[in-house]
Image (cartoon, rainbow, N blue to C red; front, side, top):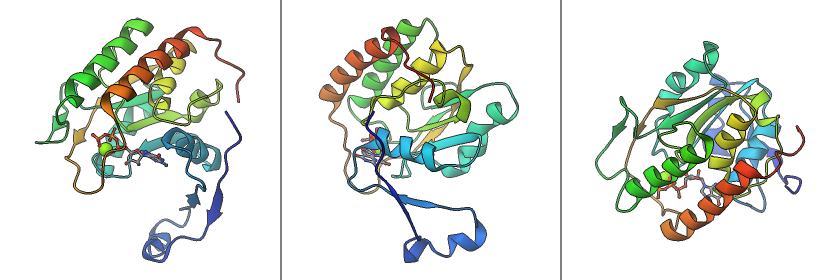
Amino acid sequence: MRPPVASITSLPAPLAPLLRRWPGLRYVRNRPDRGKGHAVSVGIRESRHDVLAQIDADLQFLPEELPRLLAPILEGRADMALGSRFVSGSARREGSVPGLRGPGNRAMSGFASALCGRRMTDVLAGMKAWRREVTASFDWTSDGYSYEVELPIKALRRGFRVVDVPITSDPRRTGQSSVRVVRTAARLCADMVRFRLWPLGPAR
Ligand SMILES: Nc1nc2c(ncn2[C@@H]2O[C@H](COP(=O)(O)OP(=O)(O)OP(=O)(O)O)[C@@H](O)[C@H]2O)c(=O)[nH]1
Ligand SMILES: [Mg+2]
C-alpha cells in the first residue's frame, strides 16, 4: 500500500464543542481522498489506543451500539468483532438493506466463510472493532471497499479470534451510496481469493 497522505488539523467549527467533552478527540483530513480503506488505515495510523473501532459516517449504524461491539474484545473473548445485520439479535429497520443488497451481502459473507472455513454472517458491515495487534500483524493492501473483507480474512489466517456481534441498521437518510452492487461484488470475490491465498506480507 502506498504511504498514507493525511493531515491533522483543528476541528471544524461545528465540531469544536466536542473537544470539551472528549479532549483526546483528533480530526484527520485526507487529501486527496483515496477511498474508505485508505481512510481507515490512516485512522489506525493516527490512533493512540490498543482497541480500535470503525463506523460508517452516514450513521446507518448506531454509535450508541459501539459499547456492545467492543464488549467481547474488552472482556478478552475476541480479537476482532464484526458488526452483523444478519445474525440473531440484529435489527434491520425498514429500507436499511434495499434491493439486491440483502442477498448480495449474504452471498459475499457466505463466500468469505467458505474460503476461511468459518462462518461469518456479515463481512461487509461498516462497523467493526479489533485490537491494534490484529491489523499490525499483516500487510494491508486495499484503498477501497475490499479492506472490509481483507481485515477478517487476514485476521483469521493469523489465528485471531473473530466474532459476530448483532447491530441495528437504519435506512440512508441523506447522500448517495458509493456502492455499485455488481461491480463491487465481482471485485470483492477476486480480492477475497487473493486475501485468502496470497502471502500475508510482513507485520507492520
Ligand atoms: N473516506 C472515504 N470514505 C468512504 C468512501 N466511500 C465510502 N466511504 C465511507 O463508507 C461509508 C459507507 O459507504 P456507503 O456508500 O454508505 O456504502 P454502504 O453503507 O456499504 O451501502 P449503502 O447500503 O448504499 O449505504 C460511508 O458512510 C463513508 O463513511 C470514500 O471514497 N472515501
Ligand atoms: Mg451506508
